[in-house]
Length: 292
Figure 1 (cartoon, rainbow, N blue to C red):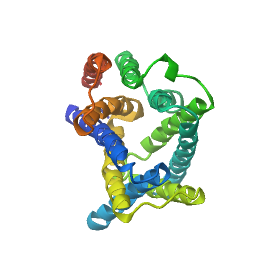
Figure 2: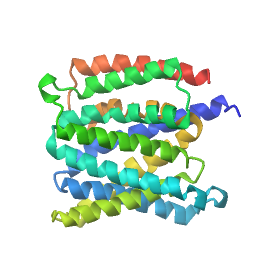
Figure 3: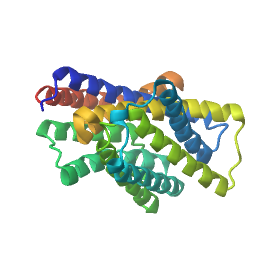
Figure 4: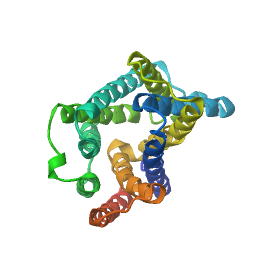
């Protein structure tokens, strides 16, 4: 069945807004990170997303026809397991490599998502979309690149790549559930990942933050992970994992803009180079969407 242009445009805007909400989390975490250790930051972000969406479901309810059924449980379990593996690999990788490495390699998630969509689920990737994915990835690299000396392939880099592959596969598992209630899916992701993070943080004997800071981190998680993931899953319903991932990969661009506005950072020439590449890629994606 052919999807209407209006539905595609709405899905595209949802994916872009999802990326913006996620990117807004970066400067917020940088500020809140002065009061909350990283292990608990991740746990409370996910818990805030899961619990926040649980509350919205209590007020608005879950559509019975869109609720998860027994047939979808394997996809849901795979989604949670891949999320857990990704978080573990990323957490270990961050300790073994530089922040520039992690940021740069994080863009590999788009490649993993698109390749998995093509290889395992037969999603079509047009020439325009493929070119846009390449351009957006290049732009993301330009935004996160700090110099040749900062990019050294080591064990930490390998772990970060593993986390990206897990998230790429997880994105495709989520796609199999995208016709279901998006809040329910995001709630499952948030609650399980958050609980795992809490257990890991306690096990590592990390210091508990003050309640006010924990609440602020949870509120950030509700917006940047809960609402963001819900919008992203909605976008996948109409765009597919590969194309939704292409739109979502604009997050690094939003991250730079928010860092400029919130953290008062000043971009250099790399920012403007990335901006031009991003605009070119966006035009390609829009043209590809119109011709779908």
